[in-house]
Image (cartoon, rainbow, N blue to C red):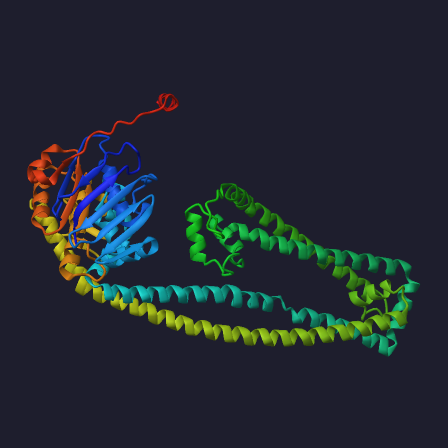
Length: 574
C-alpha cells in the first residue's frame, strides 16, 4: 500500500505553501528546497496525517491544517482541524473509528512511525528505541504472533510483580510491623512485678514495708526521688530511641527516602498502591512520585539533603545521650538496691511497690484495690496480645504462602520469556541482522562491515581500534545505519506480509547530511531499485539527477509577515 495522491494545506502555519501532488502514483517523491521552504514541516505533515499531532516531532498543526492521502488501493485518509475520516471501499469511518481503521488497514503506529526518519540525530529510530525495544520491533515485523506472545507474557510478568509488591507493602509489611510492636515479654515482666506486689499484700509484708518507709523519712524521700528520676529517664530513653530511628532514615539516598515515605500511600483516583518502580521512574523524570504530575521537587530534595548532611552528627549525639541515660539509670538502680539492702525487710521492694504506695498515700486498702485491677488488666492484655500474635502469625504464614506461589509463577513466566526471546534471537533476530548487514554493505560497499546485534539489543560495528557501540559511531555512520535499519524493516514487513502492516513507505527528512557523495549515490541506488516508496526532503539539488522529473517537487521559500510588535520582540531577542 503506497501513497498515490497527496495534499497538504496550511500545516502548522498559514504561510505553509499548499502541496498538492495528484500524480505520485505510488512512486518515489523528492521534495527539494532551501531554508524555510517547509521541508521538515512537510515531513511532519505526513506523520500528522497518519497518526495525529502526537506523532509529529514537536510540531503543532494549526487549526486550519489539512492533510489528505489517496492510496494506490483506493483508500482515502483525511485529517485536519475538522476531524479525521478514513474510507475503505464503500465504508467511511470517522473520529475514533477512523483511528481504528488506520491501525487495521495501514498499520500500528508503533511500527509505522519508525518508517519516518527525521533529520535530528538524537531523534533517529535507533537513538529513541531502547535495546529491548529494538528487538521487540524486529520481532513484531518478522513474527508478530511470537511478539504478541512475548508481550502477553511480559504483561503477565508485570501484573505478577505488581501483585507481589502490593501484597508485600499493603498486607505483609503492616502485619510484620504490627507483630513486631506486640511486646508480650514487657507485659509479662510487668505482671510479675504486680504478682509480687500482690504476694506482699496477701502475706501482709506490705504493712512492714510501709512502716519501715514511714519510720525513715529520709530513706522514703530518697527512694521516691530516685524512682521519679528513673521513671523520667525511661520516658526520655523512649523518646530518644524513636528520634534515633527517625534520624537513621536520613542515611539513605534522597530518592529512597521519598519512595519510603509514599510506600503506604494509595492513588487517590484508582485506590491502588503506586508501584515502587513507577514512583522511581517518576522521580527520575522530575514528576511527583505519587500523582505523576510535573512538579519541582528541588525544595524537598534540598531539605532532605540538609537533613542527610546533618544526620550522622545527630545520630552520634543521640547515641551518646542514650548511653549517658542508660549509665545514669544503672547508677540509680544500684543506689536503690544499696538502700534496700541497708534496711531490713526492704529486699522485696520494687519500683512498682514504691510508686504504688506513694500514689495511694500509703493506704494499703487502696494499694490492694489498684493492684487487683492491674492484675486483671495485665492478664487480659497478655491474653489478648497472645491471641492477636497467633492470628498475625497465621495471616503472615498464609500471605507468605501466597507470595511463594506468585514467585513461582513469576519465575516460570520469566523463564518462558527468556526461552522465547532466545529462540527468537537465534531464528528471527539473526535472520534480520543478516539482511540488515547485507543492505548496509550494499549502501556502503567500501566499508563492507557486518552489523553485530547482540541478544540484549546492543548494536556493534567493527572499527580500527576494536568494536564500537552505536554511541561511538560517526554522524554519517549513524545516518546510514538508521536508513538501512528502516529500509530492512519495511522490506521484511512487505515480503512477509506482516499482520496489520500494509504501508510500503519510508519518509526521510534530509537523510544524506554528513554522508559523502559516493555513499549517498550507492544508498540512493539501493533505495530506488526497491519496490518500497520513498518520500525524501532535501536541500541538495544534486539529488534531482537520480530521480525522474515527475518525481521531483521544488518547495518555495515561505515568506512570513510579522507585526511591528513581533519584529520588536525578534530584535530584542537578537
